[in-house]
Structure formats: structure tokens, C-alpha cells
Length: 234
Ligand code: C5P
Image (cartoon, rainbow, N blue to C red; front, side):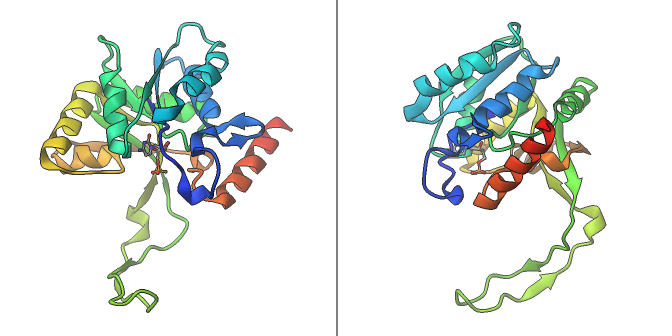
């Protein structure tokens, strides 16, 4: 499943993030192509902006044509990422036991990462996230009492135990259905599906991610993504 209904405001003004182009091709098309290339993927459910379902359907008809066995479904998303994932879950065909949730905003994830996540779920994990070690030291702060003032540091977590999480995140379908239903009941809005599994007592494991699976969020990320793509094509 690819939640792609966000506005992507941190990228600056323009089209919804998933429809911005990278190497002349919309970010979303890159993301869907990688998934469709994985032997582990049978169906791709794309959650599109509410007013962009027809446009996304037309865009993707070509992208997924390379692999006829992968079925493409496009459904309208919600106001939050969590609502969009719920819309995607509701559109999954029966008989699907493993769900990978992949942010459209990570167009350059290598197919090996997709395969590794799917394999870890097939091998018995209920929730799997790809992740990479952190380059930067991380500080925990308390928000400054007044905006613009320095923020007091309260802790420096041991960097060797921290990981930066990417997507696709992989789940047993029943587990993902259950935690999303519970989140609605309890009024929780999370930006991370694996985080919901943890919150409700499930077990999440990490497999190696990849530096090229970074999220395209800010304008500088687009510059980096263009450079990675150019290197791949040279
Ligand atoms: O905003 P953020 O970068 O965390 O979004 C992560 C992913 O969730 C993006 O692929 C975005 O399109 C998607 N999303 C969504 N529906 C929303 C908000 C975000 O599908 N309402």
C-alpha cells in the first residue's frame, strides 16, 4: 500500500508531493514501480489525494504495466496519514496476509529492501521496519518556554542504540487492521504504523534499510534524489 494523499507542504508550493517530478517522472510512479518490481508484491493499493484519484489512476496505468501480475487499485485518501492508511486497508483484497506500507515520498528505495521486509514478515515477524544507523548525535530537549529562545537539553540517547526508520514497513494484515481499529477507538493519530503496533503491545523488529530510501520532504531532498537518480542512470 502506498499512502500518497499528503499535500507535501514542506516541499514548498506546487502539486501534491507524490505528483512532483523526479527525473521527469512523478515521485509516486517511482515508488509504485519499485514495489511492482518485487516478486513479493501481488497487489498495489495507492491512496490518492481525494481530488486526484482519476489523475493518479491514469498516471499509474503505465507504471505498473511492466508486471501484469500486479493488480493496481487506487482509492481516495483522508485528511491525515492514518486515515489514508485506513482507506488503503479497507481496499485490500481478501486473501492478502502480508501488507507493506510504503510512503510515496521514498521513491528511491532499492527493491532488495522491499524484498527483505516482505521476507521477514513471511518468516514470522508481525511487524518489520527497515532502518539505518544515525549519522548525527541526537539530543532530547524540552521546548523553550518562549519561541525563539534556546531549548534546554535533557538527555543524549546512546546513538549506537538508535535507528532512523524508513519504509516499506511490513505487517501481518490482521495485526495492522487491529492496531488501526484500536487507534480510532482511542483517538490516537500516529505518523508511523509500526509505532501503533508498539503502543498496543506488539513486537516490531528492524531489518537493514538503505541510504537511498530517504524521504523526500524538503527542497534539498529533491536535489539529492535527482543526483541519486542521475548516478543510477549513468
Ligand atoms: O507528511 P509525511 O511526509 O509524513 O507523509 C508520509 C506519507 O503519507 C506520504 O507518502 C504522504 O503522501 C502520505 N499521506 C497520506 N495522507 C495524508 C497525509 C500524508 O497519504 N493525509
